[in-house]
Amino acid sequence: MLEVAGLKVFHGPIEAVHGIDLAVGQGTCVSLLGPNGAGKTSTLGAIVGSVRHEGAIRLDGRDLGRMAIEDRFREGIALCPEGRRIFNNLSVHDNLRMGAATRRDAKGVAADIDDWFARFPILGERRDQSAGTLSGGEQQMLAIARALLSRPRILLLDEPSLGLAPLIIRQVFELIAELRRDGMTILLVEQNASAAVEVSDRVYVMANGVIRRAGAAAEFGDGSGLMDELTGVH
Ligand code: ATP
Image (cartoon, rainbow, N blue to C red):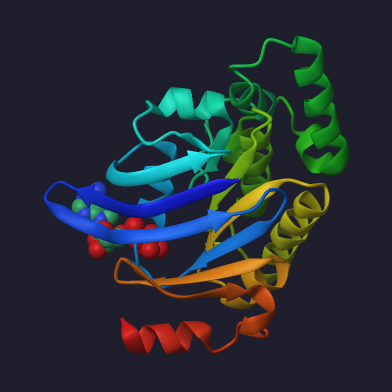
């Protein structure tokens, strides 16, 4: 479904990603793992079109590589960014509506928002409260829900477990597993290798701007040791 081929990413004169290939099949969850600075966020930035890049980015065969960021969004790519980036001063409800800004089916949007409130009652209880007052875990759920409100064809998640307590991390990964079961296509960037491997069909391991290893999630066991191995490489 999503195919990336020969992708290079640049930050000014610096080449951060050196021609990688990766693919995410329809309805699968694929993890992109690796230490800080490996080039994971840069790769997601290239897919959404927020950083300069070269190479092919195809969604169901259509090359998005030269499209503007908003056109890629319309094509069905949604990013839940690192650090959540919710709108602190907007209410929970308005944050969700922002995610649906390009949709014309007001009733469908309202129904989707109600579904999220049913799924996470705490968000429903705080629908009129500013989102900045939520806990980190609640903000992460809100950020994922907001990204999904555009009804994307593929969801890109950048380190959703970052900075959260272990119990909350488990809830975040449970949500990812549920979304996958419901048929969502997901590209997950993580440093929490064990949890990511568990919810994934395929895994790519990245370091220093290249893919070091790729394979079915089952080949990675429980994922433990993967990051130690990589830190040695780094
Ligand atoms: P992290 O988990 O820290 O986000 P990452 O694997 O996502 O790590 P990137 O953020 O993609 O890695 O960074 C890859 C490389 O590009 C690093 O060497 C980083 O210093 C560099 N880089 C990232 N963003 C910029 C930028 N805006 N300007 C210059 N260099 C950048």
